[in-house]
Structure formats: C-alpha cells, structure tokens
Length: 136
Image (cartoon, rainbow, N blue to C red; front, side, top):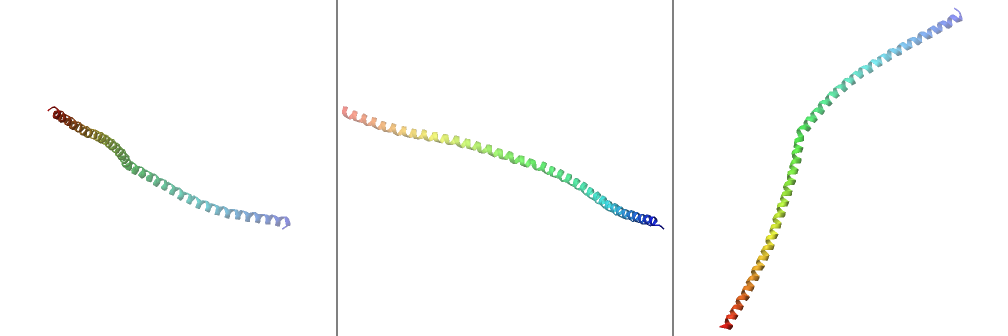
C-alpha cells in the first residue's frame, strides 16, 4: 500500500465513523421526536378534555345565573315597591300633618273667638243691667 492508499483508507474510515456518528445521532433525534410527539398528543388530549369541561362549566354557570336572575329581579322590584310605599307614607304623613296644623289653627281661632264672644256678651249683659238699673 502506498501513502495514497493509506490516506484513502484513513479517509474512508473517517467517513465511516462520521456516518455511524450521524446515524446514532439521527436515531436519538428520532427517539426524542417520538417522545415529543407522544407528549404533544397527551397534551392535546388534555387540552381537548379541559376545553369540554370548561364548556360544561360555562353551561352550568349560565344555567345557575338564569335561575338566580329572577331572585335579583324580585329583590329589585321589592326595593322599588318599598320605595314607593315610603313615598306614599311620607305623603300621607305630610297630609295628616297639614290637616292637624289646620285643625289646630282652626281650633285655636275657634276657642279664641268663643272666649272673645263670651267676654263681649258679658260686657253687653253688664251694660244692659246698668241700663235697666238707671231706668228703673
């Protein structure tokens, strides 16, 4: 063998080692990609399951909200009714208060007028008695 033959043999061996190294590396890469693919399928399956569960949960929450909504509406209606009753009560109380004030004023004026009329009636009677005594 000549030096050229030995160099060719070394180059062939180096190429063979390179090919073997690349094959081992490719086999490992394929195994890793298979693992990634399996994990990706599991994750995709979990995501699909999670999505279905989320949809079910959202449906359940919407149903519950639809059941609770009339309660909130009833509470709002009750608040409005109570407010209306309060306003009506205030108006009635104000009306009664005004009537009591008017009655009180009228009563005070009536009492005062009654006392004044009695006073003048007594004076008139006294004058009549004096006139009778003078004349008679």
